[in-house]
Image 1 (cartoon, rainbow, N blue to C red):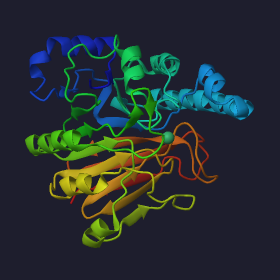
Image 2: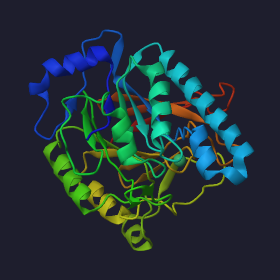
Image 3: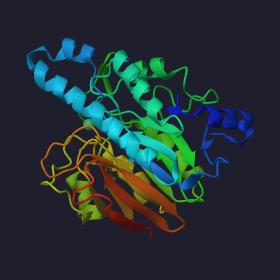
Image 4: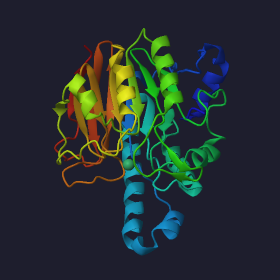
Length: 335
Ligand SMILES: [Fe+2]
């Protein structure tokens, strides 16, 4: 099931436009609302909402710190939502690139649903991270997701968001240790998803593709020997945390991207560290977290992405508006 939450007005729009949804279940999200900038997207990541029940069940030895954390992430979510809503132009959509919640319990998704009501004028698209739980997510949001969604891929939340200048392809890198327990660490796309991804890229090659997933790439030394080292365009504020713990099938993922020149950018969370690098002709954007950072110089925040016909402008929105990186703009030019 693709993980879309749409405003009521937009749900109605899509319901009457079902024939416009292409064969692979793609969603055409260009509405007719004049207040919306169809090229503007709010990108957020790693919100890590944490419930009291999760603290009671999993953090009995660390209760005080985790209760503080729960308050912090809830406050940060609300601050980010307010910043998104305060934008002069409403974005065409908001993409949350995983670790939506911290433990993955049902009640955490109920908390997420309540928080997302703050943003109920904006279509929301969610990707799964290693702290998420696919079934608990689905069960809580079943009522709210777009009724026309069809199953694109068994047991994965994937989707394609079409827009004027680029298609956004959302992948699902969450792996489950057991049906009840997410792997709290690395991710994997898997053979079936990579085949689906390849088919999507080949059928949508008329426009640039921006790929969104939770886990960072982690290429092998052997792959790097072919592609060369990454070229850092925006370095992290704190020391680079390294790629360990990222996507296990990175080499196959990158081989697909690098063979298709219309793939222009990959956006991912997981590292909790904002940075941008380039490998061959593809930009890799490591998202700032909304929930919490690991280092003192990193800032919590999100990114406004403005898609253009030959690139994208990213504007960092730190929750602390006095942070040195607040409203820093980075122009990515497709080559
Ligand atoms: Fe995270």
